[in-house]
Image 1 (cartoon, rainbow, N blue to C red):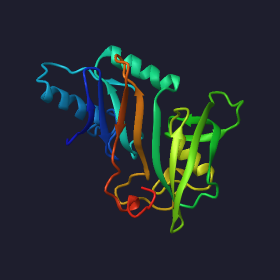
Image 2: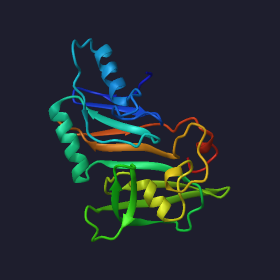
Image 3: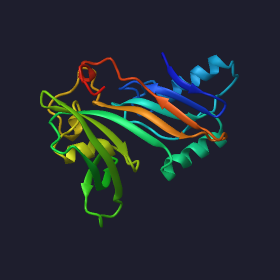
Length: 225
């Protein structure tokens, strides 16, 4: 696996995930980003035996972009806390299959996950198991019946951004699960985790990560990029 490393220090490893690759091993048995990252560390630092790497957040399999791991138990614990506390600032770019009518705003929903189907739906606040999701969005540009959108999740729920756009009647291009009409050639979803900034787990500084957009036609030609 060719791994694109964005940052590597004693406590943090930041990498760019290609769409289609699971972050952790799953029932498919396909190679995972975690496996590739561990193999990289083993080669790079000539480590014998198993390599520790803590998973602190995830991206959906069809989504590309920045993923951060903890290289030590202390690093993983503190990075995880940054995500739980909202200190981790994430920015995504997305292309919707229908144009957004609003320029910007905040979408708040209560979401319920069906683990057996790996889907999420919007429910009433009082629904048992429902979790609040909040997403800030900004429409950057419209083109050929699509919109380029910047998304900033305030909470971190499963499929949150995909459901948020679908709720505005503008599902993401390629996202068949949430209302898109057709798939993308590589079966990805037009959602990319562009940047991630969070406190370094042991030093008084920030870790700033950026993953460049995939070389797909869906991302080309936008003036806002």
